[in-house]
Length: 113
Image (cartoon, rainbow, N blue to C red; front, side, top):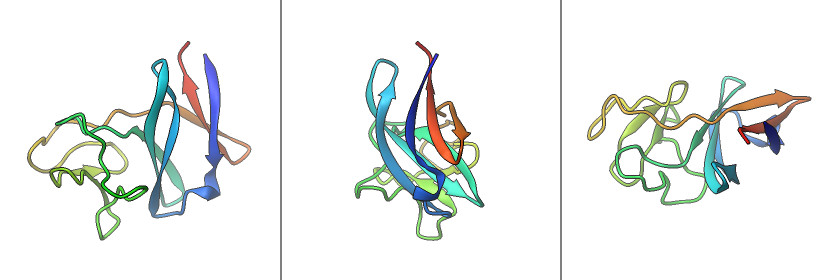
């Protein structure tokens, strides 16, 4: 198992999201980090319905109210804390969570080697 530093926790604005390119499953992939109420959530930037990335505009992954992750391709809403889709066209499907840890106020991706 190896780790890869993504950023300092405070580089992710609380109540907002940011994108990272990082090694995942043997290649660099787009990841989404969301920070809500001081807690970090990390997901693969891939809609479970289409496989497309979730954003049209870089680093904009949340709806206008900043309460859900939004797929800009078909307007599906995902819960920030679980990655669960709560709207059409893919209710019940989930975003792929990414293993991570926080050490010394930095976010590290944990990769299975």
